[in-house]
Amino acid sequence: MQPDTIIDTTAEFIKAKFSGESSGHDWWHIYRVWKNALFIAKHEKADIYVVQLAALLHDVADWKFNDGDETAGARIAEEYLK
Image: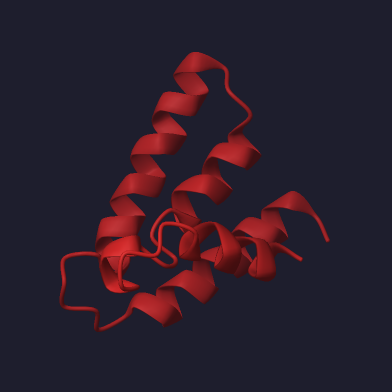
């Protein structure tokens, strides 16, 4: 799969997962983080692909919503990426 396809697929996955989220960690929060991260990554000459995936997946399983489990996000992101 091409990087652009992976980013688009990930964005759709996250959008579906977080649509209707009322905690403030909704799709629009993630979208803003993603677009700001992309802007910074271009300015800093960072790996844009990695930065976009990290931004999109940064709240995939926030510890605050998983009984304080700080490993939940990394675990779910890893499962998704595999």
